[in-house]
Length: 284
Image 1 (cartoon, rainbow, N blue to C red):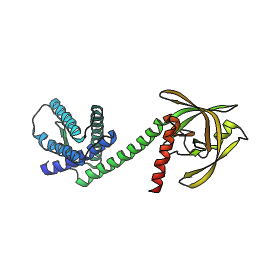
Image 2: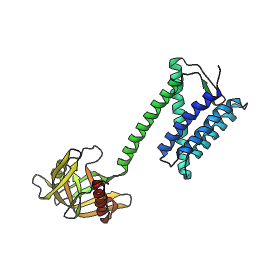
Image 3: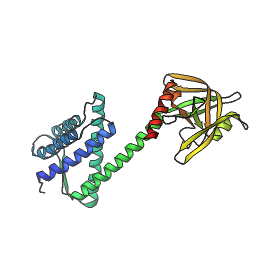
Image 4: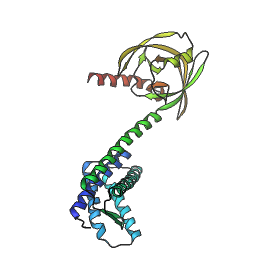
């Protein structure tokens, strides 16, 4: 098997750069392009020089591990100790995952490769390697977006209790920073029509109407006044009197109530700041 150092450097430079970028994205750390490039260049140089060394196998793996740590530290810009650890862990996990995928692909297509001293030498077509790496990166990015979107929802879900004169219902409420609804100068939460029926019965007293703007257009929604609402959060339980509820669609299995951010921030003035920001965005 013949190995060309420039090919080995270029391949590892691109793959290490891709893995470093993905690791930084997973950790949501700060970085710059030149840092990613420098870390990738160190990885490419390591791939060229390391096979020339004659060291015991256990020492080879220690050196490779230390080299991976160095790449991560170079790639992160002004990261804390926790951030650096997170980036390093993500980098090694992604490296193992990509290496496993490539090994499986080599075995499937009968590509010749040699393993030893903590490195891998193969004679795979360039298109095959980078096609696999591209698909791997696309799957990782898709998975990260899904995970962080799900995590964002879960972090903003609170246990809520709505109490009327005769009934008390318990639902999960989602604190939506985009909920800027107001009625008579007060913040408004959004619940489904079924929830209004469960709380107030067949003939609830309507306090008025508000305009709800969604991707499907604007519609008028009835507003009802709930005597009391309790929101359980990390600091305990907060109670609110005279909470307004707008009846609309809440299409989620994770929560049944869309909270106004004022109820989780515990500061009603935050509601007015959100209105100003939303108005500026609308003018743009």
